[in-house]
View 1 (cartoon, rainbow, N blue to C red):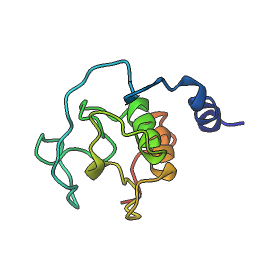
View 2 (cartoon, one colour; view 1 turned 90 degrees about the vertical axis):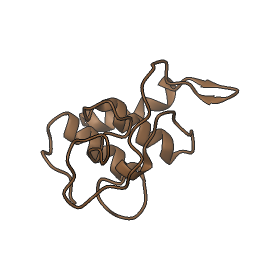
View 3 (cartoon, rainbow, N blue to C red; view 1 turned 45 degrees about the vertical axis):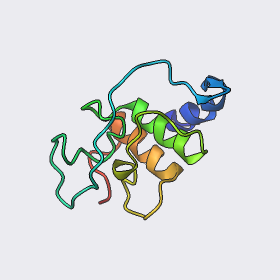
View 4 (tube, rainbow, N blue to C red; view 1 turned 180 degrees about the vertical axis):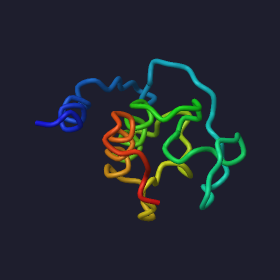
Length: 112
């Protein structure tokens, strides 16, 4: 089983669920709200595809938030405009896997 498969196979057991939904256990600031442009730049106005929590870096937390969104957990500080990293028109588990692959340097860019 590959690194990505191991990560996502154990994800269900690591989610913290409460009566109010998912509680990520960390604080952050809301991400940018403008849609992704064809040639994005890392500014607060446009954001960077994959950095869905607006932390300024694309990391495994972004992949987890995309996966949580995909299973309707409504993650906090989640910018949907930056989540569809393969430009398929939907935010799905493929987007989460691509962000995870980017984080572990299996890929260096997103498909679009």
